[in-house]
Length: 405
Image 1 (cartoon, rainbow, N blue to C red):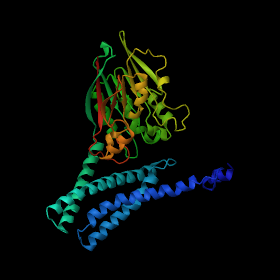
Image 2 (cartoon, rainbow, N blue to C red):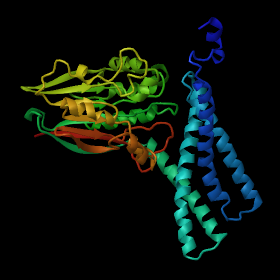
Image 3 (cartoon, helix red, strand yellow):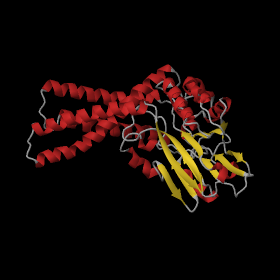
Image 4 (cartoon, rainbow, N blue to C red):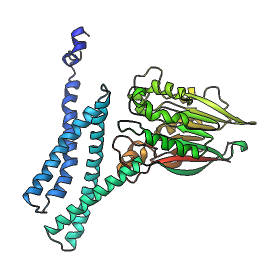
């Protein structure tokens, strides 16, 4: 590439094969964003403002103006707030605006769609317009506002503690009752949650874990940008081990930096490696692998490698594996892992996203069995990504009590 092309990459020559894919992408992506945004905004606008309600012209004007403002502001704020090349307070401010709009518009869209059922019921009951449509309009607004407020409270609260007992046949008797506490998907980001991070730390320490695991997606942004929010992790305590693996969000550019930083905070970063706990003659292998997206991220030396993580271990010993995404369970089954712990799904975060998550992941949350030996526990996560809402998908601190078989 010439110096001129490096300074003005938009003027780069076409690929040698004559491909027009970059140009096509510049057309297709904005078109898709425009279409999706239009649908997300149009349905709530039709439901609340129009659709036979016959509201006064002034109300229709105000409603339409709000809809147009949301339609324009949403993609603009999301772009300005989530550009990979940008960093700083301005980017975070735009991200907060975009994330709140995205979550609010999604909630409004979902419950506007569901309001069609109320409209049908009122029609069957003989309620005519404009009363029918006004009832639907007001009900939809109330439901959306209540869910948004409640969902924000759920996102910002200290996560609930969820206890699960996991029986592991190969676990030695001396490890019976071992308490493994999972913290995952903290997503320290544009919305400063330093106070929340301190509360999370206090809640974890009150559980007195033997093993404490952070299963990835620690933050959105660089260590320098999120240092204060992540700082309380240094004070999270465990009697036997504190272990961490990367999630997919680390591979937006800061994976190795976060691995190194967690080591500085006193955690074991399991970058395709393992540690072994001993109690008398009994042993437990705790292994960790990179996220499933690591290999394609371009980060040198990164990529999930379970064989490397287990290299040199005794195959008769029980294995606890940290892998960010539940769909990494296939490798765990093949390797005879006893228990994999994962996050990533957020339990869907804002209903009904759980149905979409299920298309990509084998499990959305909870304990499940895979193959003859392997079990998988999928946490809903302790934090949230993007929109500061959790609707019908509460956050959690997961406490797994291991029971010897």
